[in-house]
Image (cartoon, rainbow, N blue to C red; front, side, top):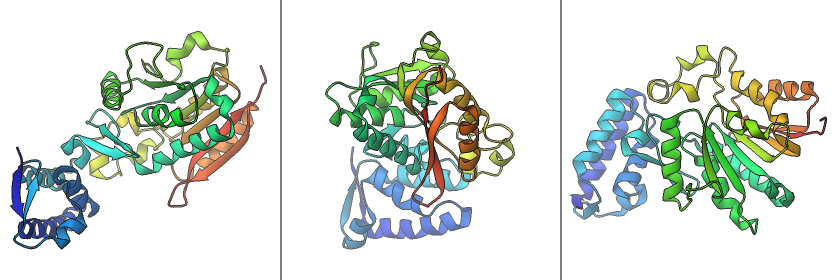
Length: 310
């Protein structure tokens, strides 16, 4: 059932909500995000509306106000309160069991698509998203590579959390991707990193490995914003004492599954890219090692290729 509220009421609420954001130390942008996602209303529409104009809302006005109070007073992420987030062209269900996908991670998909354009032969092997969470990367790859290839790329999403995989599968279905059979273009696997692919060991069946693993050092997790530290899964954040525990594992294991020339692509935090590039080179099993910045100019992604030393 739709509700209506006068523009002047919404404007006054927005003014107070911005003041609350400053008071509680939450992001100001959250005010307009909440209005856009729950009220289908952008800032310009609200600004241009006549004060007494009645604006239709898809949910009761009280719902919007209550969720903003929860966000401010309890630091609950807005995405969990709303139940979804927008990422690339996707609307993805999110809940406390999964990491909320960040805008910077979208660039990983862009990098993978650029590589596929240049090397279409990579479409022949399997693509894996390790630590899939909400399924954002795997779903985007499955959908967006379709325009590059005649046959759908075989994409696999892996996570050790059953709750996360349930959400990922639901997100895939909501975007028209079936997970009903192993012949689907997108398949989900419960397990830790390469574990579900043990039968493929040494066979070089994988063309591309993508991962946004936990990379924050344990001592730094407690200093994260409360919206992250207290609600998002520690499993997706805590990278061990130096933040490199999962990344070290991926470096060591990937050559046993990726084909020669296969792509190893991960997201990292500031300050880790040079360390990872050194570690990758030291194995003697990778070449063409490089890093790429995010939109803020921070080295965020590290890419390497597998050499044939088998």
